[in-house]
Image (cartoon, rainbow over the protein chains, first blue to last red):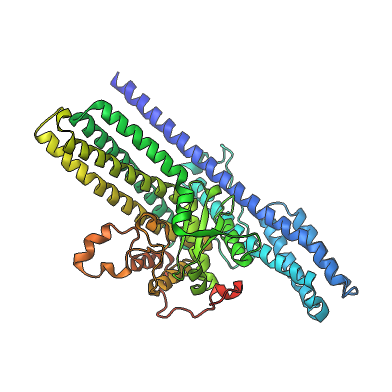
Length: 186
Length: 319
């Protein structure tokens, strides 16, 4: 009789532990999703600014077609990028293309002084700051989630339960590591 | 201890402190019921609940009134609002808290509001004039972590609880002192009750203060994490520590709100006699907070603070 009670007790305790742990994983996964949505909003905002910016520069430097094409392509790549890794890669590409566009703009003082161009440049900088803030948050949620599903005992059951490692928002060759280094310092 | 562990253990301890408040409340009500009258105990609990509810509901406007924080117009201080926006995105808050300005030369900041969506961050004009962008960001990240960790909620509760306990203890004490005939028990029990009524408000105050101090370490760690830059928070604290001005609105009831304590001076820890008073401080000593950040981030602050331009210049404010 005593054995039966012990078995029942152990099963109940294990059940409670499982439910609590499972709910924690779900919460962490939702945080990752929210974090990704935050980045997505800002990436969308960034690509929405591009056509106006290209138009503004085209008004002064219509013959620089190659640069406009490159920026437009980079923007399309960002809009069609699937998943955080690819999006980070495409976002990096857009930064490079924009760098060239601004280099072109350097040669036209009238353009650089125009109200419209300054405003666009300002908005772009702001969006880039927001992307990097959103990215810090997103990468920290990914780190927490991945750590959780890679730890014992969850590593054994995470896959069957449908929890998969999530991708960091970082391009290849990115030197700025996500949170890990700081959070795991002693 | 890693930051995550620190956050978890802080949360756990805060839970215990809140439990302590609830127990204290029950003990007081029990004492009143035992020594005086059960119906009086129930009435007192009802008054306490009403008082507490009123305190919670009016806290937002009350804090704004006490600190003198002014809301901004839609076109004011845009770069600063942008900065608050970015920090709250980094913290993963769904809504950017409102920004309010306190016209005061002492550099300081606070957070208030029961729910994140209805919270606001107040900064003094002195803060904008003292801090370069990087450190200002850290101070705002500190306040935003208070909001994110629901510290503003917890601390409002704690203040209201402490008030309620003081009120009940007062009622109990007076009833025993002046309502002699209605006493049920006598002798030792009454003495114990009187001692209880006298000590309870101090116990509540102590609980409130220790809760507040833990929250500060947690918010420092949170700020470091939001910006991935623990050094910025430490630099900001050092700058606050070196600043000699104290806030004009320094008031003990709102002291727990600020990033740096407006009431107790930093040097109150220096000699042993004042050690006791540090138990009643709302904030841990700044040096200990800097040391905690240095340990977590694995860096040492430079001897001299960087002489960067204060953010006020970017806002076009006069120095």
